Image (cartoon, rainbow, N blue to C red; front, side, top):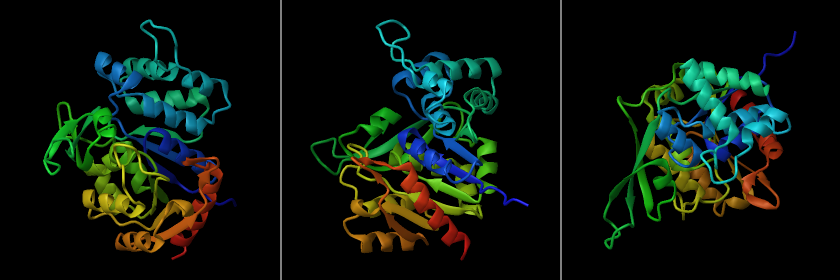
Length: 317
C-alpha cells in the first residue's frame, strides 16, 4: 500500500505563487493553487475591462507553474504578442482563458479544461468567481505625512510611493465571495501556504474574503507562511521580515500559523522574527532558499527541501 500524497494548497498570485507551486510539485502531485482575481493592469486589465471577465494573468501563471515550463503548450501560454496592433502585449494564455471563460461561463470548469490542455499536475482555482478590486489606506502622499488617502486598484496599490497601512476588497455588485471549491480545498488540505509574493496585493487579499478567511482559521492543515526575500518597492518598501507578519496579524487577528520560512541571509535580526512568528503560534525556519545570483527570487528546490522539514515537524507535533 502506498502512502496517500500530501494535499497541498498554495494561496497567492503572480511570480510568488509560481515559485511556491514549483516547489510543491517537487513534494506532491496533489497541489491546488488559489489565485487572486484583483489584477487590473496590462493584458489582464484590458481583458477584464473589455469583457467583464476574471483577470486571467495570474491564473495563467499558476497553470504554467503546475505544468512545468518545458512543454510546448506552456511556452505558447506564456508567449506575448509583439507589434502595435490590438493583440500587442496580450499573452496567448490570457486570450485562451478569456475564450474558455466566455464559452463555458464557469471559471472552475474553464480552468480545469486549461489544466488538461497544458498537462498540469494539480489544479488552479480563483479566489473568487467574480473580479475584485483592492482599496488601500496610504500615507506619505500629501505634504502632511500623516494624512491618509484611499487609493483603489491593484496596480495603484502595488506602485504607490506612499506607505500602505491597510487594504480592503470590493466586489462590483456584491461583497467579496469565495469560490466554494477553494474553500473546500483549504478545509481538506494537509498543508496550506501563504506567500511569498506582493504582500498587499497577492497574499493578504485571501484573508479578506470572509469564507476563505474562515476556512484558513478552521482548517486542520499545517499553515505555513513563506516570507519574501526583499521588500517590494512601493508596496512594502522598508518592511522588515517581522513587519510582514505584523501586517498579516493586523488583517487577520484570528489566524494562527504553524511555521514561518525565511531566507537566512534576508533576516537581519532573527530573534525579532522568531518573536513575531511565535506571536502567531509559529516556529521559524531559516534556510538558504534564495536562487543565486538573483537574491530576490526563491530557489524552488531549496524551498521544497525546507518545506519538507517544516511540514514534517508540524505534522509530528
